[in-house]
Image 1 (cartoon, rainbow, N blue to C red):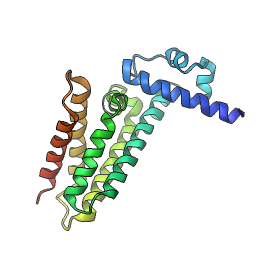
Image 2 (image 1 turned 90 degrees about the horizontal axis):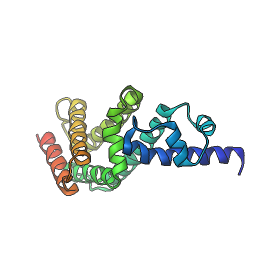
Image 3 (image 1 turned 120 degrees about the vertical axis):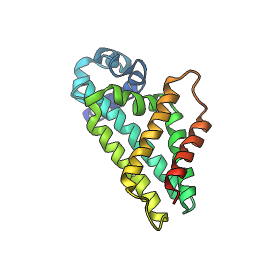
Image 4 (image 1 turned 90 degrees about the vertical axis):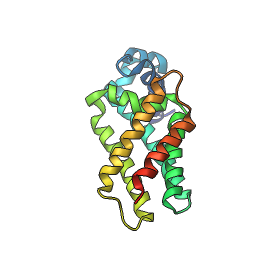
Length: 193
């Protein structure tokens, strides 16, 4: 392997290790030493890939967000062009995609908050991107947008976030289909005229 390929391989191994460890035991419970041991690289090699644990957490979080955005956007694009069909497709895909892997749900909805200021800019970026997805999906099929569609979209993102935190933290977790049905009900009710 070339030096570039070795660096990319180490970086990928660190992201994979962090994806599991940042989900459990969590961001604050994971040391650089443990990350390096799990990824089978040296501490020196870690710093060739990332400036620190915060930088690695941002990379893991951004990947989770980007994959989720792509999946949700594709589901909305493939849905029939009605508001209800787009709500069902987008919300259903979001909840199912995020809960397909509890690590993704934990990183995106629990550890992002626990990490605090480390991810505040990345979290705001992702909220903005998901708000844009909602606003575009609604704008394309709605003749008269609801009052303050941006604020409504932010509130709906908050509702889904809390539903997913509940799914992550409770035992037994609520069934995913109930989460989807609840989130769809919230969205439908919010966009009724």
